[in-house]
Each structure stands twice: as C-alpha cells, then as structure tokens.
Image 1 (cartoon, rainbow, N blue to C red):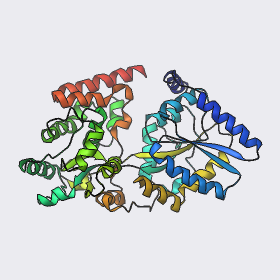
Image 2 (cartoon, rainbow, N blue to C red):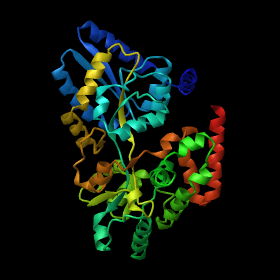
Image 3 (cartoon, rainbow, N blue to C red):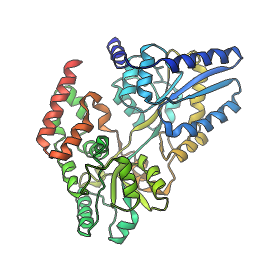
Image 4 (cartoon, rainbow, N blue to C red):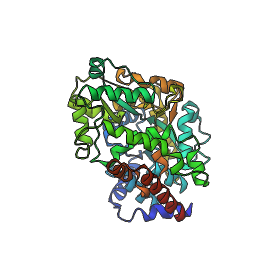
Length: 413
C-alpha cells in the first residue's frame, strides 16, 4: 500500500490544491448552514449536464444534502494529487483503469465487496473492476460501460450489397469489395496515436487468451507469443486505409466518416455523437470486431466506463451512499444511458438506441471482454508504439519492444 501511495505522490508533483481548498471551504460553509455537502468528483465532462439534472432531482428529494458536481480538467491527475494529500472527494466517478487501480491499491476507497448494490450489477463488470485493480476485494460499484465496435455506413453497405461480417475472413472480404469499388474501407486517423488503440484492443482481447496478463506476470508467456496474431491482423488492416491516414486526426475522421468518405470506422461508440453532429442524417450501425473465424468466440470489448467509489476519508459516507443508490435507480440510470449513449452495468437495463442494435446480442449473452490496454502501464505508451507500427509495419520489432518495455516496468516493481 505504501508503495502504491508513493507512486501516486510521485505522479502528482505538479498539481494545484486550489480546487481542493475551495471545496473544503464550500463544505464547511454549507455544513454551518445546516446542510450536508458532499463532493461528487468525476472525469466525464460530456456528462456534466446530465449529472446536473440528476443532482437537481436528488436534492429536491433530499433537501438536507447538497451535491457538488466536480469535474476538473485532467481529472485523473487532480485526483491522484488530492489522494497524495489525503484530500479525497466523497464520491469518485472514474473508469476502471490504472488511475482507479492505483487509488484502490493505496487504500483510498471503501470496501464494497458485500454491498447489496453489487447484487444488481452484471458479474462481468464486477470482475473487470477486480481484475484491473488486481485485488480480491471490490472497491467500487460499476455503473456504465462503453463498447469498442466497428461503426459502418449502412448506405454504402447497401449500395455494395454487403452484409455485416461475422468472421475475420468475411471482414477482409468486405474490405476487399469496398476497395475494389473505389471506396475506402477504413478511415484511419493515425495523426492521433491513441486512435490506433480501438482496433488493436479488439484484436488482442479476442486472441490473447483469458489469462494472458496473469501468465505474463508469472513469466509464462510474452507479447511475442501472445500478441503475434493480433499484431499481424492489425498490420493487415492497414492495407485498407486512405492515402493521408498519417495526416488525419480523430476529429478529421469523425467528420470524414460522417460525410461518407469510408464504409467503416474502427472506433468505439463514443465517436457516434461527434459523427452525428457532423451529419445528423447518416445511417450508421455497429458490430463487434469479427476477429476470428468462429463467431461463437467473438467477444465485444466493453470496459467499465464509469464506476462509483466512496472515499475512505469521507466525513459523510451515509449521504454519499444515498446519492449513489439514487443514481442506481432504474429511472435515473436509464436517463444517464439515454443521454450518454452508454450501456448500463445494471442487470436488466438495456440500451434501446436502434443505432446500437448490433451490439445487443453481445451484451445479452455476456460475451464481453475488457480493454487489454487497461492492464498495460501508461509508461509503456502502447499508443505511440502502435503509431510507429503503422509506419514501419515491423511486427517482430513491435513485439520485442513490448516485451522489453514490460520487463523494465516489472523491474521497477
């Protein structure tokens, strides 16, 4: 625990405590007025308006509680900095990623392993929270999930007589047919290194095996062994891009796909709102990456995009829990899912947006797998290594570098 906390402190050298001080002042002032003020700190600026509405509703039902909707820029850095000063918000809303893992290991959150709220959460998301932290206990309630899927232009598919591919061979055959028709199969945006990740995550998650990172930590496998297929398939996809794929970024890609400049877009559902902004009339659909030739083995990469954790140092854990329980209520969770185009971690709540119909079966079957890059430390910088791979297409060099970087990280533990 001390080592984890030390890592957090070392990563937080440049933070400012101004916001924390302001929050403290607000809290004290409010408490003196007879109300309890709790701070709800989250990392989703796009959801701020949604939470404003939900908080307003909660405060009407609970007039003795004020909820502060805290959503600073670079929330992960700010949160680590506050953790280093033991000035944690009452409620933390982040993804199941390395930030959450570091804080959970440092003992910053309440143990909710036996919380009744977990009985209503899909087990696969609870397991993801445990897996990413590497802890046996559960320290957060999963709330919302995203999905890493192929977005496709229904009009182009119809024009070319294409159906949604279910296997890798069908996927490549569709790309070939699109290319032969003089159109672009995939609109890549490699100017932004992170845009290499969605496709690579899907390929790796479906080919690495279920225990890859456990085996890697025990020295039983390597990236050279476990990621060869994913990396070779990633390079194969590069044949079907456009001429300026190294000069275009994420924003360019959203607009270009919206305008029909490619038949498919290798992103996640988070890109859909921006695509629809650029062209509200586009007919689009989504489908899981068909990574192998066995459709029964296809798993949709879907991670916990938002979880709720209560700080161990909160002075108002009862009120914090009350607010989380309010957000978990069906009507409130549905409101969040509808506005944020997200999937719910709550059992029985489904996403009804017709655009996302192609993913419903995966969620219904529980054919889900977490983002592999959530298990790779940021210091390895997978996105930049993949960006280099798009240039040199040297699979062997990439895999050796991944193994070397992993050994460096392992050596620091």
